[in-house]
Amino acid sequence: MRLTLSVIKADIGSVGGHTKPSTRMMAAVEGEVAKAICDRLLIDAFVCHTGDDIAIIMTHTRGEGSSEVHQLAWKAFLAATSVAKTSGLYGAGQDLLVDAPSGNVRGAGPGVAELSFDHSLSGTRPAESFMVFAADKCGPGAYNLPLYLAFADPMYCAGLMLPPMIKGFRFHVIDMDNTAGDSVIELDAPADGYHIAALLRDNERFGIDRIVSRTHGEVAVAVSAQRLHAIAGKYTGKDDPVAIVRNQGIFPAPEEIVSPFAKAHFVGGDARGSHVMPLMPVPINTPVTGMYCLPIVSCTGFSIDKDGRFSESFTDFFDNPAWDEVRRRAQRKAIEMRSQGWSGAAMLPYSELEYGGFRDTVSSLLKRFQVRKERKPEAAE
Ligand code: 13P
Ligand code: 13P
Ligand code: MG
Ligand code: MG
Ligand code: MG
Ligand code: MG
Image 1 (tube, protein in one colour):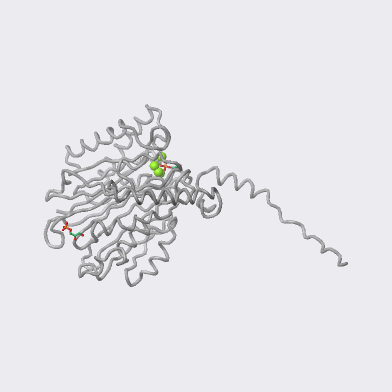
Image 2: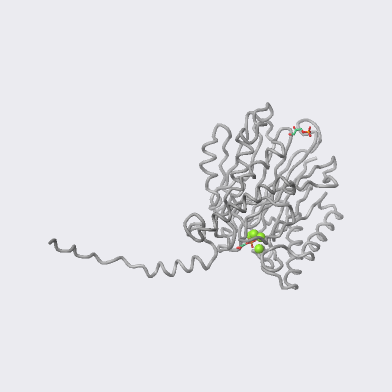
């Protein structure tokens, strides 16, 4: 069976500020999704939230970009938006940027990551397992470094030295500033490793779109690398990417995939989407309530049975005491960075300050700059 995994997520309103969706909003999304499973549009689905972003994780056989699956997600988000509006919640409908997308919701606001594979539970995939990363309060390139380290650096993934992976992986890197369409370059690790790094270092412009096994041609990773401001033409919250990562066997093991997140590396995001702050790994359904507005990321794991259904339970990777140490480090790094307030590296450069007001403030001052008239040199004594 040709199986597709689709993760579609949106920030459509939250309680007490931009913290988390309400219980009734989650129930509204779950209700629509349950109907779609009953109607056999979906084989299975799981709904969770990270901060105030709701993610719908789905399996089906309708292929990537299926208008029926995308419309179902849109309908579920509209139902939750209506709850958010009735309850007077903050940012109701925030990521639903168009009135009614026809078909595919990519480019309409929600984040979309999708990949497909032949699902037979035999050959190179006697078992199918995958992980879903979901982030809130951060920019679209938040996974650039961790995914590069997991799929291109044996210091993080010793499994790359094994026969099924030793030929490396092909990185599809997308230029997120190109609004004409999906502008993608394909580069092979390890041969083009430095070229890949030269692009991925710029988290705001370039993002990993996909990673494919060079040995087996199987897609390992899909990321929702898109910029909301490129769609909306103005700041509408941070991009908060989601990613699907298949693991084990011909792909890195889960511990090799999550270990780069121990860095709590600095990403663009945080309060008003305008700071540079560490990415903190958290359990799913964690609200954003700490000091500052730390970028957070969750990671769930699933297995899939022969009929394409999820295992009866899931794994919450960052809900483990091992990550408490990383969370403490992230918080320490955050306190250090924020101790310099607005200065230099602590905030994003002007071009990335999409939060309307910051740019307006600077733009109005720019109009008042004047080139100073040349002064006559002082007469020598
Ligand atoms: P298990 O023995 O628990 O399957 O672990 C094997 C392994 O290789 C972990 O990466
Ligand atoms: P959201 O994208 O979650 O709404 O966060 C935006 C923001 O500006 C946080 O301060
Ligand atoms: Mg929000
Ligand atoms: Mg959000
Ligand atoms: Mg967000
Ligand atoms: Mg957002």
